[in-house]
Image 1 (spheres, rainbow, N blue to C red):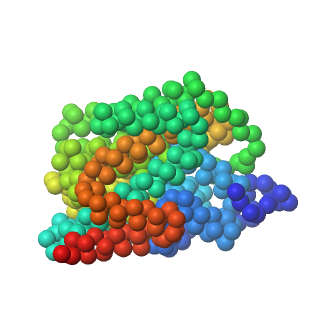
Image 2 (cartoon, one colour):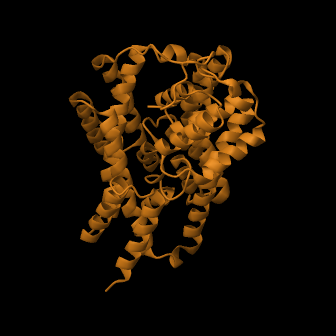
Image 3 (cartoon, one colour):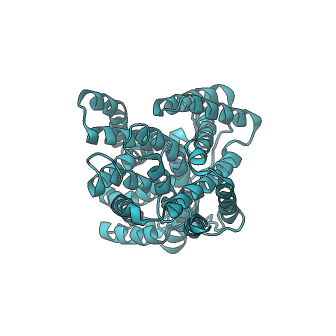
Length: 414
């Protein structure tokens, strides 16, 4: 996977730069530059991080970086953002973790919040055809994500079957709790059905967090996951309901940022917080900005039909959806050496990964396809966008802009 070998180093997991401390403001500026320039989704983000922190800055070795990526792919949440949080933690403690997240996240979050405010205030001035083009390009983006994830996470008949069953169930039970139940059932099925090989060779991670601190952060994660729905019922509040919905979505996303689409759609559209049209237009726009896809939460928070909305709503939803990533990364680091060797853990994760591909496949049909593809020209535009992404390898932002322009031209043509 990596081209550089480090067998001659005296310390296998760390190199000379890794022991140094970096000021939190410097960590922020480094990640801010990445947040402004990192287009292409989570896989591309991990490539940018490797170039910046392994090759250029020599903060950690190739194998240490690979091990860190493995941890963040094992946990629910956005893997690239979690790797950034862990890198910031290793260089400047908790302040560094916060600085890394803020630098990488704020550019796209601000851009999407401004887009949401623009739609709400000047929606009549924006061409309906252009907005429809954003919904159409979302079909291509999600289809590409389904194909890529299925190739990696569903390599055999058993996992393809789990994927298909999961997709059918969430289409028949279109609710957030139905999706949670599918993920849990898939984990149990993985325990019973899969026997992955044991992993032996690895490097220790270049981060030291005590076991007691890890237990504290993990306990807080589960306390919020279980307690927020109860509080939202006992203390009816729009703000508390938003925090509960977005925290739960951030806690249950396995397999990449695109999987957050069905979870968030089930939370914000049926409740009437955000219209389905605005949801899909924002999701399409999210492909045109750099940084993590989870900043789509800022768009949704700013688009809320009830208060809080605007900048405050965007900030609340943004923090709520990323908070599980902080708690899980910091809490899991002390126990990763044991977890990564656990065959039962790997088996459960194999089942969960197959199920989340099914969730995304169901979302490709409802709401993405059903809301965007109404006539032949919509299908043709979505097909061209998919070919542009998968085979022409055009950058996503260019495909989004081109689809919006093409849909606008089609809407004004006689």
